[in-house]
Amino acid sequence: MRSAPRSGPRSERRPAPPLDEPKLDRLALRYVERFATTRGRLADYLRRKIRERGWEGEPADPDALAQRMAELGYVDDRAFAEARARSMTRRGLGARRVADALRHARVGVDDAEAVTPDLAEHAPEAALAFARRKRIGPFAAAAADRELRARQLAAMARAGHGYELARRIVDAPPGREIDPDELR
Image (cartoon, rainbow, N blue to C red; front, side, top):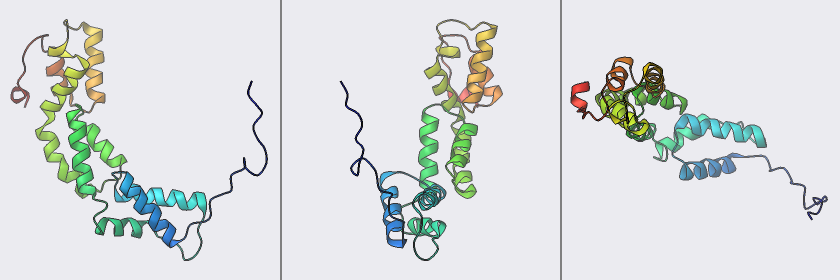
């Protein structure tokens, strides 16, 4: 039998004290040591913490603190974008899906555009990896009927692949070897 929850001073949590500049610095440093992040995400995290806990002292500037962390080398938007794009491409996601993820991660336009040429170059490999994982086209056990073909094309589109590339993979007969170069 379970006992009733305790009431009293031990069960009540005291609110965390308001943040000040040194505490915010420690919070930012702790965040960047635990997570791969971008300047934009770090600034958003710091703003949220200030909103939750309050602020004590001079007005805070989370953007300046995020920029300082980038200058110290703790945050690198370009390296984050490259790593995220490589990871998503290996999983079979297309350029559009990767670009959306980078935008959501608040990667700057310049850093995201620096990664874009690599995405276009590896689009056939990524599409084939997705098809292999989902058993589409040449990786399927049997040819797809009209309804299944439409669902497979939709899955390829949601994964960020272009229609023409997706169509060529979905229409490939099961068991056929496809060279990524013939999809370019």
